[in-house]
Each structure stands twice: as structure tokens, then as C-alpha cells.
Length: 269
Image (cartoon, rainbow, N blue to C red):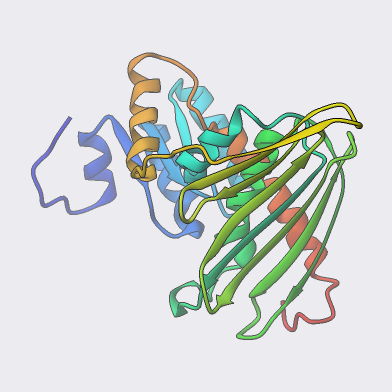
């Protein structure tokens, strides 16, 4: 449905629409989502799904009670570079993700884990088909009580290891994941929407190495994920990034945050 502006408050807006898109601050996600869900509205929530795990659980329960759909805004799932690589990814052995952005004062009031690293947590959980065995993390606080630079290591039961680094104090922007597996090395450049695949074919004595650079078309990932949510509502299918996906990524993020409390470089965290 469409409605004429102005709308004086959230309740009035929710009453006039079928779907609510929540792009407010993370701490207000639950407050906004529960209003929409209690009115049986479909909800798109920007990442992370909520500030706390309890809030995320409540959102999932409310959506089940209302029998409506939720999609979480992990936009990198719709990045053409990731889509070009996904069919090639098979039982990764090691992953190295770097998400480094230039400094902005608007982001210093939240943890870099929930602000940046959670994108890569979601990607890794999506492609590594195994339970988590161990998580360790360290961080550095430079500006205030929130960690500005964080490195995390996730070890999976199947032997795969993921190394993640997130920083909001970069001099350049870097958003890249390297994936190493038995038959290939895969580079996913989320920022520039480019993929490179180094394939290794043949036996030990005669190995053939081929470098492929799949052509990717630049797209608006935000528009693409919203269209996918629209399709899931209209066709009654499961959203591509479910509330459970959002909950799982948030769970790992909170484990990392807990591990950071023991980091000697963080003050007043």
C-alpha cells in the first residue's frame, strides 16, 4: 500500500502499510519490530537483527505468532562478487576476512563487531557448513570505550578456520574475503564487486592452475535484497536471509564481544 505524507508517528505509519523496513539505530530495532509484528506486518530489519540475543529471540517468536515474514539486512549476501563465487565454494579450509573503513565520527558509539564484522560473520556462517568449536578474539581501543579494531578467530568442528579483522580507523576502505579450499583459492572483493578464482586441477604430478575472473555487473545490493524480500512475501517463500540467520550471526558477534572483555588493550569496555 502507499500513503500520503506526512505521518506523525510510527504507529500511524504501521497501520497504513503491509511491510515495515526498519533502518533505525540498533538499540531501537526491537522496539520498532515488536510494534510492527504485533500488528501482523512483514518486517525487514537492517543488520544486526537486534541489540541483544533476548530481543532477537522475542522478534522471532513474535513473527511466528503473527505468521509474517522477516528478512535481515545482511546486504553482502546479494553482492555480485559473492554470488559469482558461491557456486565454486566447497568445503573451505581457511578464510581470511578484512573489513576496514575510513574513520567516521558517526560510528564511534557502537562496537565495530556489530557495526562491521557482523557482515563477514554472516557470510562465513553461510558458507561453512559446520558447527563452531572455538572462538577467540582480541581488540584495540583507541577512541573511546568501544573497540575500534578487532580480530577474531573462529574454529569449526570440521577443521575449517576463519580469521576476521574489522577496523573503523583505516586510511583506505577494504572489504575482502579470501577463501582457501582443496582445489581453489577464491578472492571476493565486496567493495569493488570483483571475484578472482584460482583453480587447481589434476593430480599431484600434473597440476593445472587456472585463474578466472568472473564478470560481475554492478548492482544496488540494497534494492536487490528488498526485491528478494518482496518476492518471498508475494510467493510465500523463505526469505534469503532469515531471522534465524540474523540470530546466528548476532550470537557469534556477542561471543566475540565477551572474549574482548579480557583483551588488555581495551579500556572501560
